[in-house]
Image (cartoon, rainbow, N blue to C red):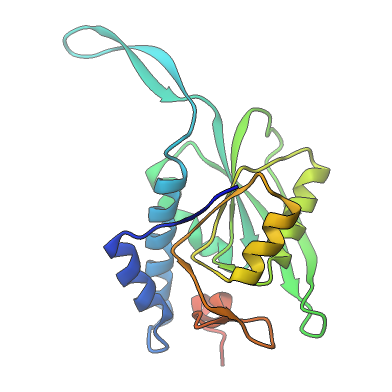
Length: 208
């Protein structure tokens, strides 16, 4: 398993704009989409390819195309803000949804919604969640997917905490984590520091 930080200058600048407390929800949404696009671009660079014969205006040639179906598994609520530009980049993607909310007493995730693509055989699966904090939501999602015989290879998160990375690595050592930043730590409430606050609240303007 590898943890890959996307260190492109544009990604770093947009991440700082995303963190800023003064960023309006509309701007937050745009930066979240753009960062998700950048991370997916990096995470998808090793997708398997296959040959297909095509006709150019001048001749017939063997071209390479993506071999397998690409599926995004989006963790609600904030994960829904990560998909739009990824799907514009590669329109053949399908999207599944897993709804989780955090029990504020135990910090454990509670499942409230599951809607997955019917055919996931021979697919490339990416799990999307803006925040990898305690790791509980990612681990719960991976456990749910195992029950459907779905085995993702990549996690895409905007920011991650060392504690969450360790938790995921301990249980799922073969999954790669792609992120823009490994932050300092979790606070006593399980929030990433310095972080960016609650991504769902900031995305949908419900923080107040």
